[in-house]
Image 1 (cartoon, chains in turn brown, green):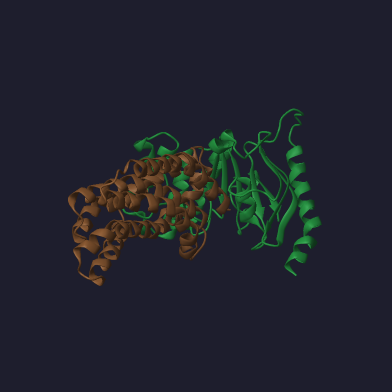
Image 2 (cartoon, one colour):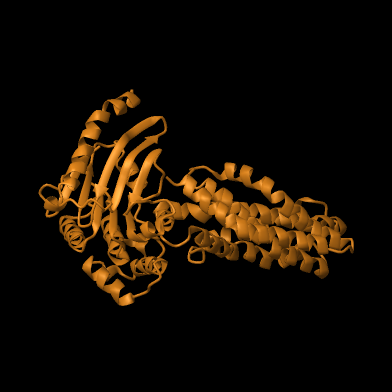
Amino acid sequence: MLFRNTATLVQPLCFFVLIALLFPLSLPAENALLQRIGGGVIWVAAVLATLLSLESMFKPDHRDGVLEQLIISPRSLTTAVLAKSLAHWSATGLVLTLFSPLLSFAFRIPAEQAWVLFISLLIGTPSLTLIGAIGAALTVTLHRGGVLLAIIILPLYIPILIFGAGMVGQSTQGAAIDSQVYALLAIGVLATTLSPFAIAASLRLTID
Amino acid sequence: MQAKHGIAKLPFLQNHCCIAFMSSAARPHQPDTVASLAAVDIRCQRGERTLFSGLELSLERGQCLHIAGANGSGKTTLLRTVCGLRKADEGHVRWQGKDINDNHDFARAVAYLGHKDGLKDALSPAENLQFYQQLDGVLNTTLIDSTLQRMQLLQCADLATVNLSFGQRRRLAFARLLLQRKSLWILDEPFTGIDIAGRDLVEQICLEHLAADGMILLTSHQSLDHSSLASATRVVTL
């Protein structure tokens, strides 16, 4: 569905690229500085772009009534929302990850760290989508739920952001990044196994 | 003021529900059978306002129950409670004696057609029907074609659903109902937006569904007295 409607696909991506590009434009043109902050800035941009895309996750289904039908259907709602989250991630988080080397180039990040950034986004963004989906499910019936969604979800994103941006920072200093990788993967496993239940329960709760 | 009104309506409401109960009891008495669908003493409220309480409903195979009532009397809320989309504030809805929450048999038996059609604008009518077939674990394109033909939608089977008129969308929603082959149909204002020929068609489909031992629970502003469904229908007024 996301791929049919190109606007929903392109918007978060443009947002991601533009936010990240504002920094090199507004800061002094020092390669060393850009390199140092690049990983963190790109991670923040990815978090904000994911947040922006969350609104389109359940709202359209709620508007046209497909969500009601999914809730009534004998198929497991938990499986359905897991599938939906992964599909959503493939159109947002995955696309952002694929574009991150381009941004790394804008920040003059060396290839080695760009590669670390790519990996960190690849293993971090699924958790962003899955955890964000809980907030999207809770705010699905609200007309202007965007701000509330941000307030609910951003605090939950902090650990992912710390480990994701930290991973890039560590690699810049030449330190080992194993612990960050494990932490991100652990968060990913927890998000994949637990959040579908939370999403399904939130949807049942909010739809009445 | 509104809450007061709701309470004042209560005895009146229970009166009607007794009638609903009696007419099902008037059928040949079988002591051990449980009603296929039974709402027991349910109460629902919206915000501070109690819409109805102490409501009893029962529905058997081959029966149609028409919920009548003014705007805001809780018809839609009742239907959504009965199909499990929202929980009753008190009381239970039972399907063959078991509560409908987490009841797989009930989920397999119920089809709901609400104010929202449950159709994806970007998909074509045929694709929309395919989606629901896949949800039920079958895919049969000839059946989709014949259903679309029956609902006179075959000429727009490949258009995007966003290009369909309101009436055509309702017809498509009915096509989904036909395709899903569920035994309990819960229909919220099924005749809205459908032309006279379409209404006859929908009534015909409902009659066939009842003849095949199906059950229908519907709301409608229009009286069904002069329709072909009248003889098979009981009316409960909220």
